[in-house]
Length: 305
Image (cartoon, rainbow, N blue to C red; front, side, top):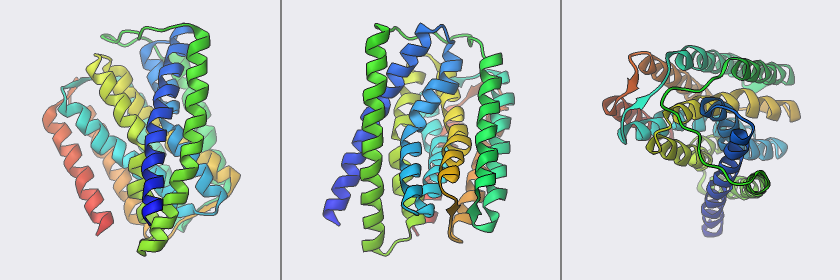
């Protein structure tokens, strides 16, 4: 148990460092190519910060551990929109564009509702996974076609393209290796403690793979790049559902236990609440951020108990 706990800690650290290199390198490469900060946030940053979820979910899928695979995505999405977005808002109000909320918020609500329906029978078939993957392709096409610079966003400074690409590759390798450690350690802890793999996946594993989102969102908000912060979180959650589960389900059909239904409904409710809050005005206030953090804490307590 102690060795497995150590593996989880090391893996989370590796995921954080790997995703940090991947995001910084990928964002710089995107800037070199002339992409706006909002487009970078919704594509490069979102994909980069979703790489831990992707690597962990694929690893769990290949091992036939559907509860960890799906629980990781569901838990990460709740964690991102509850704790991560809430914590970022507590540091200061977050500006965002109405267009972003209309397009990406609506897309996240539809994707979340679709996932709940697909998993109602306790499994994600290859056909359903293919629909999720196609949804990601359509979403990316829409973003790249309509995305522009957001008022108040400023492109981050870059170095040379070669150095940025090297950071991206090294970060990707670190994420993949760390994901293997995290799945192995979390599975062993679940078995030894008598806790279901779903609970481990939706709490410990989800929080660990969401570490890059937390760091990226806070840094972006404090650097006066709110479009990248909010856009990155919404985009990351969409990547998790459409891309991560889409690819994982294509690799191997996923099955989940009855305990998944409660967390799935909670995820959908969280998405609806967050999108509703984003519609209330031009900023996400500290009070709204505190509400999101509180909701996230309650969700953790419910799952653990």
